[in-house]
Length: 315
Image (cartoon, rainbow, N blue to C red):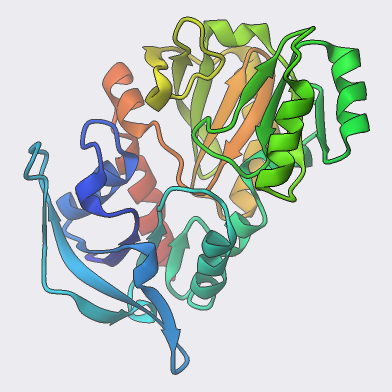
């Protein structure tokens, strides 16, 4: 079954072909004979009752420096496509939210992955609060007094933007750190949004696991170990990917959240687990496929496409 597939993504020229999950998702689609198109978020628009995009046909190859070819730009009607991938990187801001509203107008006639309405309703850090017994001690607040009280109770804390991504703006405040007030002033000037404050988890020194779930089922894990002197484990700030396996607690967490992910139409999800705690549920543009593939000798993108093709066959 040949499908017409459009990828809404950051420009293909910017991807790391050895690490990017969108690249292997598109490459697998190409291998299966699907017709693949590429457009960036500014190319999406609504006119005369149609959700459209200025897009190019795309051809990919695993060749550094020459990994893609794009055809002539054309205006395409996304309602005529079988699948649209929502794969640009966050931040989860009003531009991202507007994208979900537009793509919702074509879903599920055109299968949007992940379901745009559910993406909009599941910001990475807030979505975790849906589930009981999985989070570390956590506060979401703007009031300095509440945040100060949380700090007094837990001493060693992490403060981060509620809608941030990639480890940007994440701060660890140890007991006695005098930057507390200044840091909150900085956050307040940057945004009116509350911040997320959590008890620091010393287990992060052993790593921050990225677990991939496909259609609600845990299928692979990679550990990301922070660099020396760094509280963040994100790989673009120096975290190192390490082979790992699912623990009993990891499986317990996945069993708690998996049915809800499946119910919401979340085909491809990446969660972050530190020690015994779930810290984020990434539904916007999760990563980790290539790292797990290399460590475990698997092809997770093929499993994702199996799910998508099965859904398309059902109509």
